[in-house]
Length: 193
Image (tube, rainbow, N blue to C red; front, side, top):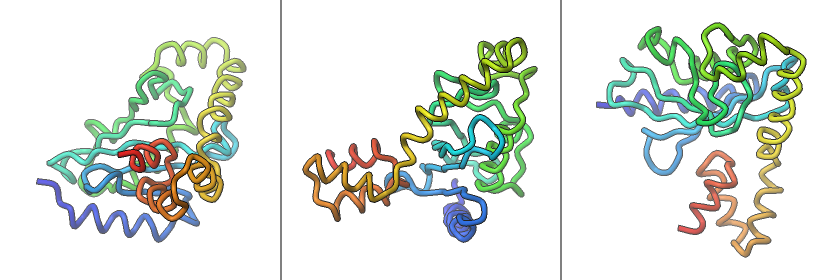
């Protein structure tokens, strides 16, 4: 059984330090078992300036089982599937500990962006490029960041305006965006359902 009081507490704790860490955690939909996290791309990496969204599912055994995390923002990285967003990271598998939190897991994912492990890849094609042609890897990773992680980091006001132009009342658009952590596509789904 999921410890929802712990998940709630972690959401509050994470919310207190958004200015410092840039890491956000929001409820996706209406269940504490489904969350959306976002991490800023680390400075000095090809991911700098991007905001990366991560889908989080809390398993029944949490906090004794790791959360299931996968990127919804496309990212070019040896340890993240360029197709599915699956993440290869030991603390999300056998190195998980109940002492860890969702925020520490997101910080670890952010650290993974800074220091790829091409010898233990999730995406063999990206890992090969990283090892054999590093400059092309950096260029591709930077291009994907520009294309996928910056496009979705439009300001909330711009997103509200876009949804209003589609015919949704501004207040409704704003509340839908707030409910899904600013994800335009999820907000649109919510408004259309």
